[in-house]
Amino acid sequence: MQVTMRGIDKAFGPVKVLQNVEFTVRGGEIHALMGENGAGKSTLMKILSGVHRADAGEILQDGRRLDLRDTAAAEAAGIAIIHQELNLIPQLSVMENLFLGREPSRFGVIDFAAMRSRAREQLAALGAGGIDPDAEAGSLSIGQQQMVEIAKALALNARVLIMDEPTAALTEREIDRLFDLMAGLKAGGVGIVYVSHRMEEIFRVCDRISVLRDGCFVGERDVAATDFDEVVRMMVGREIGERYPKRQAAPGAVRLAVENLSDGDMIEGISFDVRAGEVLGIAGLMGSGRSDILKTLFGAKRRTAGRVALDGVALGVAAPGDAIAAGLGFVPEDRKGRGLVLGMSLRENATLVHLDRYARLGVVRADDEKRAVDELIAQLRIRTRDAELDVKSLSGGNQQKVVFAKWLARPPKVLLLDEPTRGVDVGGKAEIYHIVNQLAAAGTAIVMVSSELPEVLALSDRILVLHEGRQAGIFAAAGCSQETLMAAATGGAVATETRKQA
Image 1 (spheres, rainbow, N blue to C red):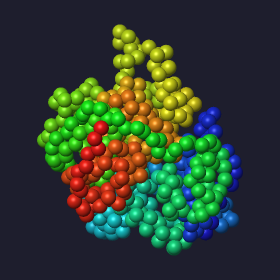
Image 2: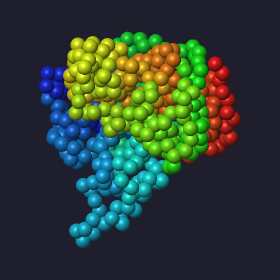
Image 3: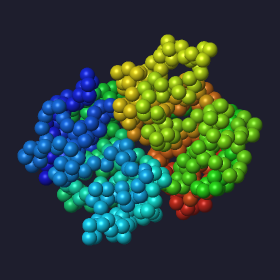
Image 4: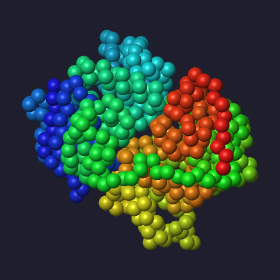
């Protein structure tokens, strides 16, 4: 089977998102769709999956024109999508989400036993058998929710499967399992459209690459006939320099000291320190407690044991407001649920944390606020026509930059980063890496969780590895390998703590 999109145009109001775009996916191939944030990738795939209707152009399936008026029509044509932003209903159980609209029934009544059994089978096939089918979807971690989304799409037995950033919240083990499944689907004749900003993944699993830039089709390449630098040039229209900007680390005194931190749930007995100007990476498998450390430090989860000191002074944090007042900042993993107020503008989100900085006698000075936001937009290369645009209308990567921007107006003493480059394109990642380096150079202590081990190794001075909520070791990043980190994360080796002295 072959699906072809020709001459696709799409605009939202006065903004032209797609212009005369061409794209083809064949059965039995994995075709990467690439481009910067805001290039139009997600919009093109939403048109192919029936979420949006094109303003112009046509979609053909084996030469026959399709009318994809809604998602049901797309699914009937054998096209399914795993969205970048999770679309589970948090109040429903995992199994109810998996079979929403397709519930197994018996004598006209939903057969919950059959639904539970089939849900277990589908989750086990993904290597996610530990997820309880009866658990509320909203109680799962972001990575677990992503696995449920993937299972839901695979259950449709689609002939064309669109994966929009499917690995953004997964760890190496889950990614390997997903790639094995993709290889099986490909061998079975399924065409897979793979949207990702992770270059290593593209060159590992994809057969062809199509690139969009500013809503236009730039070109198509066979993966075997291209390389990283050419794809980046096609995406951004410029050289971006080193992939991971170098930083001369010169850590100062201990800024944040943590002893025997526990939350009574996911983590226990965690101890580490971070110096001014240092980046401490945190690595581990999904569910190991990486994010829980940051949430507990920031007051989003209750600390049940342990001691935390900031600049040598005991730090008591009962709520995020206390953390912010003390000088802590937090970029959460879930930008839509935790990092942004979607009903507010870009400007309002960017200044929300430190609005008092722009106020005099309780009144916000609009000119000062606008000037600061314009500088942040330029600094982070946020794609938007103006700062008053609702943040929910931005692409996922640009939304992530807005979350990051909140903390740049008044840099904190300690910045907690949970998957800071999730869903961000290669150019945007380089810009965020540069900002991380700038903050560290100015004395901010940074604690960073990332599922991308090359990113952890490149940005960190030291790396804390977790295994099932416990501390497996702290490694100096220099000379460390991905294999060493994975061995510690899986409990396969006893990690020896190594500190990198300033």
